[in-house]
Length: 145
Ligand code: HEM
Figure (tube, rainbow, N blue to C red):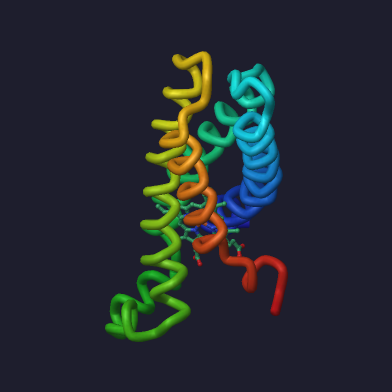
């Protein structure tokens, strides 16, 4: 297996893990938001931290993938990066949306770590990050359509 395939498989494997982490994060976030006290608990702290960490890991792997992916080179040389919807989604929308989601999760992690209670702003930021993740995840490519 060459470097590209190792990286792609690692990125895909961590992708499954990220789905699980994001799901746990949403549960923890909503449970705290609708909970009696609104106090940040350990479960929310841990799920936020690990979701953020794996966003960062995926970002680094994804950045390397952008540099070595044969699909990117083909689309660039054919001039179809933006006109072809598959290439645009996979090589432009997916990276950019995930990058913004990673930045938002970093801010959410910082807020959750330092505040004893959850504010509405943090909840909204977390939900936007999850929304971007759900939009940018290549569901069809991974689970078939
Ligand atoms: C949590 C964040 C992310 C998740 C869960 C994720 C997940 C995935 C998945 C499941 C695939 C398809 C793999 C396959 O079909 O074998 C993929 C492809 C790809 N991802 Fe990500 N990704 C994330 C973030 C990023 C970021 C931030 C970048 C770039 C900066 C990126 C760049 C790419 C590229 C370039 C491909 C396509 C590679 C190719 O077709 O040659 N990803 N990603």
